[in-house]
Image (cartoon, rainbow, N blue to C red; front, side):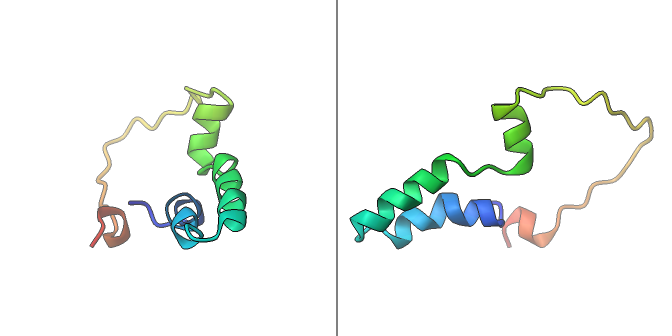
Length: 69
């Protein structure tokens, strides 16, 4: 799972308010309009190609947060 403010809203706000119908409704409305930046670009704006390129080899090392340790 990603660790971000958006992740917190999407995955935990509904759980926090599951026994509070008024705030659960508010949390669900917030979930519906909250996006990660790249999610917003692709799913809302329909951006599929930024025209960017990097013609070199690179090494990717995921952080501990990304892999979930």
